[in-house]
Image (tube, rainbow, N blue to C red; front, side):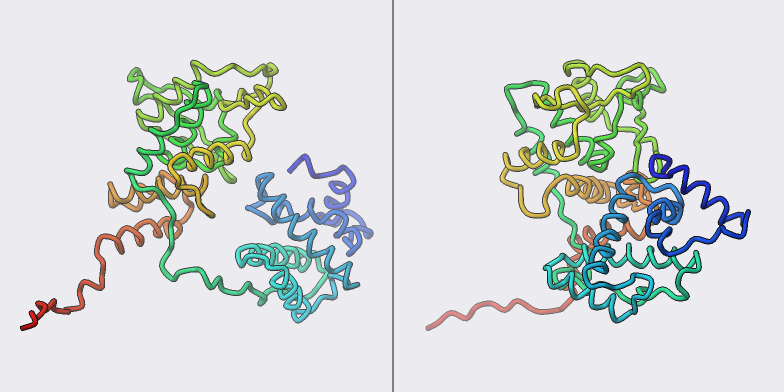
Length: 346
C-alpha cells in the first residue's frame, strides 16, 4: 500500500509503534484523517489488493458520512446506533450481501480503533446483516452445462477475427481454467512461459490473483486459443519497464490499452446474449462456477477443484460437490412411494 502511505503518516506511526517520544499518541482526529493508512495493515494480512482496500474504504467512508449527517461522533457510537445504521441501509433497499460487507468493514474499522486505544470495546461486534431470504441452505450455484458451454464457444462468431478469438479465449480462461475477471484483466504476456517441448502441454501461466499469485497449467484447448489470439492481435505499445497486457481494447477511446474489467464483463454478457443465456446474476463469475461444477462432475475430486480454483479453504469449494451430489443422488428417491396403475373405467 505504498501508494497510500504518506511521509507524515509514516513518521507519526513509527513514533507511536516504537514509543519514540511522549507525543506519539494517535488521537481520534489523526486516526480519521489517516485511517486508510492505518487499516491497510489490518486487512488481508497487511497486503490488501487495490480492489479489496477500495471496497473496505468505500463502505467505511459511507458510514462516516452517515455519522456526520446525524451528528454522531463515530468514536462514541453505541451498538444501538449501529443497528440503526443497519436499518438505514435496509431502508435504502441495499442487498443483504451489501449490508453484510458494509457491517464487516465497520466492524474492522472499530477493531483497529480498539487496537489504538481510541475506544474500549467494538460497538459493532454483535451487529450482523439480516439473512438473505432468497438464499438456499444448500448452495445455489449458477453454471453452464457442458453442452451449453460448447454452444457458447461455437456461437461466438464475429467478422472481426481478433475480437472473436479474444472473446473465446476469455471464456476459456474463465470456464475451463477458473480465472476471475480481475485475473483476466491483469494477465500479461510476460506471465506466460514454456517449461517443455510439447507445445500443447508445456505452457504455464502466472495468475496475479486476490492477495497472492499462482501458476496454472491450462488445457490444450485454452493453449491453442491463447496462442492464436497472441498471433493475430495488434500488439500494444508499452514502455521498456511496463508489463505487456494480453487482452487489449479495440475501442477508439482506449485503443491498444489493457482491456478493462468492465469491457471484459460487457464482452462476456454479449456472448451470453447470443445463446439467450444472459440473466440477472449470469455473467463472468458464473463461468468460474462452470469450471468448478464441470470439473467436479468429471473428477469427483474436491481437492482438484480447490487447487484449480485456488481457494484457500476446502469449505468454499465444497459447494460444487453439494450441487453435483444432490443432482446425481436425488435423495428423495429413497422415499418408498409405489406407483399404482390407473384403474380403467367400465
